[in-house]
Length: 480
Ligand SMILES: [Zn+2]
Image 1 (cartoon, rainbow, N blue to C red):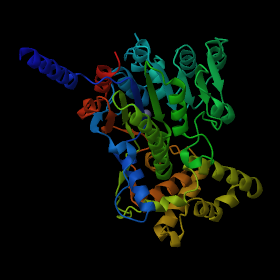
Image 2: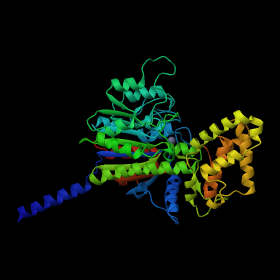
Image 3: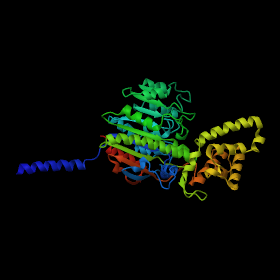
Image 4: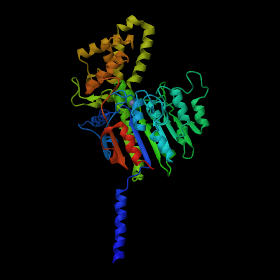
């Protein structure tokens, strides 16, 4: 009798033990939507429903998370953080000063990052971003610098990082801009065993076993970033494909840590460009779906976190002028990001200036109105984007000011145009307003941002807490 009961007790003990056992995350995905506050995500959800011609939202995959919370984002020396201090908080669990990268505020010592800790635990590490790979958010995981703008030094630290996969944007400074150091970042990476790839064919044929990878997207532009999702050619390599490739390349029995940044959400929000923002949020969500697919096969030990480093633009839904129905489908007529459209606008203007001269061109804004009509739908009554007389006046004033680009000494003009082309930013604001989207700033804001988690240990990330806490909560459940 005793023997029989003893057997049951042992089974019961084992069940209790396994129920109390802490989850351990061997495969960790950490998604950062740079500048992606709650509205950026909700606008993407509203856009999808608007495109189906109905009220409500189509929830993004990231918003179906098992657990949710909100995190405060202020830095050591400012309520509004920059991306350097924000990534330092998320990646190392420490507050630091704006512009600093994974070091203390006085720049005396480095902080160990979660990616470095994962590496020490035998996991492989992948770092992916749509912006240059030496930009603050990706760099915060592998570099330690007193200034985030030390791009060359950051590149050298990347090449020496021993991390297993880098993918996305390129480098700002492959060579030392001061001319002191003869080492080329790419050459050093190759010497350290990285396979450097910057074309689609090599990317597509990349197979596990090829070793460490440094992939720079073939379509990186002058600013070393991948194109905005709204500007991407069909067939261009998407963020989700880079995420899938990173999984294929570094999946191994000891696990991995993969950070994926949607970096241009922030850039689109700095430029108060609603459509570019929405499309980059959707691109990040596609990458989240790739991680969810992996999770479905490794449910016990995969953790997926999706958060932001801060909000940007003060984006909101509902304006005094705007469409209370928030019909964001009207953004579908925007043919490219406002950054790209402004480039085209300037090319056309330069051609006209050469022929007509400045005085004649200033007196004739019809070509500029035609440009925004064809490229954004603005002014088209049939699309619900017609102008009233005030709007025509507003754009005409901006047109004449745009010849004096980036010279807005009057603070009121700066509030209106920031450091952007006056006409194009006025058009961008007008389009946002007409669909019901408002912006409070060309910079970051201080509002808390959502954090979401799926899988092993997801419940650890519920609640309202500081961004530095994310690191501690993650360290608690990442593979020992
Ligand atoms: Zn940021």
